[in-house]
Amino acid sequence: MMKPIFLDTTLRDGEQTSGIYFTHEEKVYIAKTLDALGVDIIEAGMPSMGKDEQRILQHLTQLPLQAEILSWNRLLCEDVMASLEAGVIHIHVSVPSSDLMLVQKMNKTKDWIIPQMEKVFTFALNHDATLSFGAEDASRTALSFLKVVFKTAQDLGAQRVRFADTLGIMTPSSVARTIGYLKEDLTIPIDFHGHNDFGLATANALSAWENGAQVISCSILGLGERAGNTSLEEIAGILQYIRKDIQGFNFVALKKLCNTLASWINSPIPERKPIIGEKIFNHESGIH
Image (tube, rainbow, N blue to C red; front, top):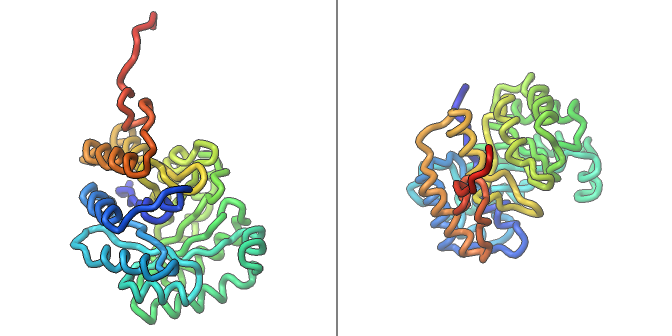
């Protein structure tokens, strides 16, 4: 099995956590530390939010990092242009794929998606960008339609596709079936982006990896909107110490990063939080 690709979204989805804002200097520190840890892709922000976001993204792209700096964009040419103006060439475009979100968020139907993909992909690729494509609310999207959309993204030149369990409603068994089905017609990697509304984000990410999703979206401390995302420290711990799919991940440095972020956002880490809690090795003797 190939090595998993870690895509950290602390600077994008993590900053969408209610009440959290990272300064320019904090974002640079986070990016540098993630890079030193060996994180492959850093989803660093949304340039369409304005000039401040563009400035930090431009700074991050100029750092001597091994990690790919990725921007998040709606499936719109103007969003892609905002990324290009910020100096970002690795661009993720995302669109709601479920009927409900298409209507409620965008007042569109499914018939709009593929022509819009063709338009945006052509625009981005003509500007020498590399593209990944994401389906928002994929877990409430008809799989037959999603399969067509992902295959279209591949044919148009996407380097990977993202399955977003936007509301965190999947289980490990449903993830296994879904990823297995979607992989049938794809040669590019699938990125699984899970949310933790029912406490299953890490378990679902593990299931996705075990069933063929090569890219795991995650965040430090599991930060993210609502109940958060897959926790980087948890999924990395599982893959290193249980499955042994990776080795050499520096958990001492990761714990320091987690503690630093927790202090910045004024949210103490629970003593018994898996992997990084201060008392996870403490116990009292019983009769067992």
